[in-house]
Amino acid sequence: MNRVGIVIVSHSPKVAEGAADMVRQMVGNDVPLAWCGGDPGGNLGTSVEHILKAIDAAWSEAGVAILVDLGGAETNSEMAVEMLPAERQGKVVVCNAPIVEGAVIAATEASGGSSLDIVRRTAEELSPQ
Image 1 (cartoon, one colour):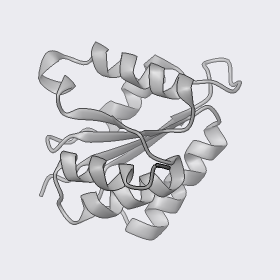
Image 2 (tube, helix red, strand yellow):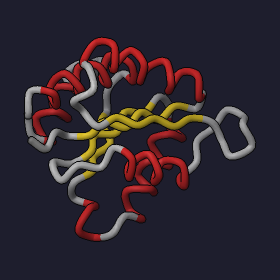
Image 3 (cartoon, one colour):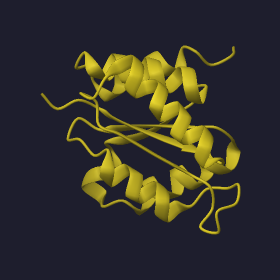
Image 4 (tube, rainbow, N blue to C red):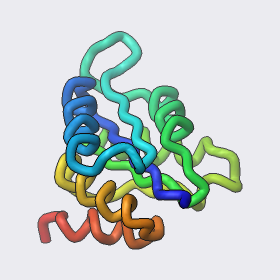
């Protein structure tokens, strides 16, 4: 079964890695998962190139949901999606959800075989109203 992949993008590599570790411990290894954080110089920030690599690492024909921490991570993730080949662009979404809680609930939903739209909507239910 193709399960939706999850990508975690944080300004901090330690936050991204920690959130991914939490997802693995709570959901297991059935969901494609990748993370990236920090700029190419090893400082706080995000990198479109790193996000593209993470999307490739978590790629699934069922799609990929990206969870981000701050505005720059969202902007760079959206740029990465725009740089994908046309046939992949519609299968990748940036979720408006808290990064840790959103990643865990999105991966939980994905592990059950839910569609990309359901994975995104479930994660976004955690957003403050």
